[in-house]
Length: 119
Image (cartoon, rainbow, N blue to C red; front, side, top):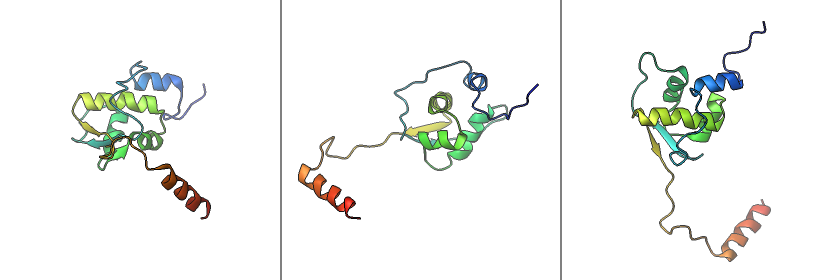
């Protein structure tokens, strides 16, 4: 029998971590949504949930959490949905500028590009 590390990205382990779920509330999180813990872990919580709460003492982006946990983003989103549903975290979505989705004039973008190329 071959012994593998507990935190391997093995599909069997990921299936167990997510309770067999393969989808999260996609509208709840995107890659840059900031996650902040609202409560401390409780006894008996899943170890991945405890680790997430430990990392979220300050705002942390979903993609950064996935990297720190060494888990796929989809799995992290499922775990975050569990914590959000139980009120243990809050999700802070990025705000767009007051101007909406309006881009700067093309001439400004060209000058920025030239400036970056000159660096």
